[in-house]
Length: 263
Ligand SMILES: Nc1ncnc2c1ncn2[C@@H]1O[C@H](COP(=O)(O)OP(=O)(O)OP(=O)(O)O)[C@@H](O)[C@H]1O
Image (cartoon, rainbow, N blue to C red; front, side):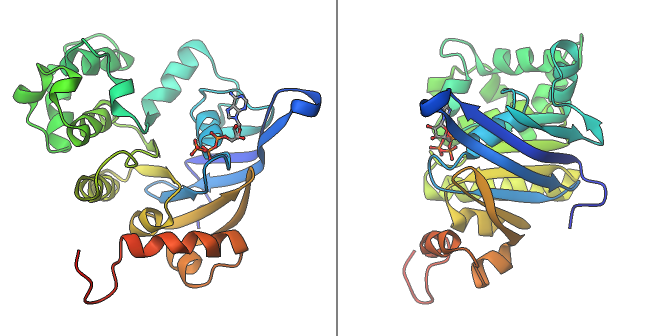
């Protein structure tokens, strides 16, 4: 397990939105640790608090309570230059790649803007390298505007944008949800390869236990703001303990059709 020298550790992480009778405890005292090179899936239904937890880990949202440490250093309240430094190591890919790219900007220019986190310099080689890593042809891609690429190509370009910074941790929040099945498997395999080749950790946030099982070493099941179960992917699928995990199992056959079934 990851407890010895985790890359990222959260303790007692809590987020309350609103006040008084309208208060929503979106995340409620979550502890988690992600080891270097580990792929952890955070699984739960819509509204269970996954994105809120992910955004706190990314330092996009301040927690109400609790702490986040990266490589042993407290990053709970980092702002300004320290937060930008954190983002060199912890990058994110979200659900909708069209929202992540400026509609009228060429893809190369969006990638170049992200590259500024690395400091001044000509980033053309970094951009080309990152696009090649995700299976896109740099020359063909950089001059395109988002609507000239398919959803799958654009999602890969978004992963390239994150990878250009060579992050230690990639948070992929429903990053494959909008992709059709064949492209989804390509992107899942890409994430697995990146872990193998770069020892990069991945926090894969999804409502789909099937995808979590396909990709992750370890699965955390989130329900109403809490982690209700955690274990290896095999443990969660073979012996789910929580009723909610059992109900999620209905999703698994989507990626593993029964023997003899047509794909
Ligand atoms: N900015 C906000 N203000 C108020 N409530 C919020 C806010 N963001 C999230 N919530 C609430 O917090 C709870 C958790 O939402 P969250 O988006 O984290 O869940 P999720 O598991 O990621 O779901 P989804 O997959 O639909 O995004 C929900 O009840 C949601 O309505």
